[in-house]
Length: 212
Image (cartoon, rainbow, N blue to C red; front, side, top):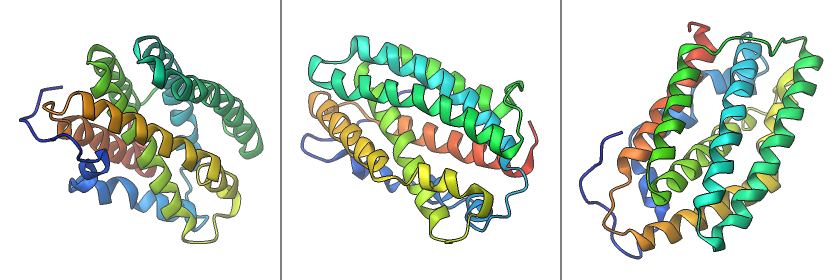
């Protein structure tokens, strides 16, 4: 992942990074509309692939805890615990929907996993910004799905990722990202955000099209 030109200045909140054009595509995808309307016939494809991604995210975040500043470790460690619980949630949902989680990763999943590997090689500030963005996108995407008010068999998923506890966690990650930017104000982050958004769009596309 290439480094961008200098962009952030001290005191500018990390949320300013969300003004990239990919934001709408990542959080207002047609697949999310289908989920919200209860008509996402490929939901099982998404569920199985996302379970694979979350398993990788657990490993990424656990290693991020180890290299994070002491003041950030509590939030990140609680996030790891939450992700492990989420894997159990995937098992429950898969059983309810009759979906097998024993699948091979599709191309978009592999590419997103590769991005996590790249972020592991980046400095902490860039890695934590990447983590915050992917969780913030998730929150806003599922809020968009929830706005359709139906969801049908996917109501549990919509409720799960719009829960106030998840929103609170995302807000805590934003505080960590803000603190990291304050320490590395000369480090451009728009390339990190852009990469995460591009992979989110590709993941929704994969779910909608089932083409890996």
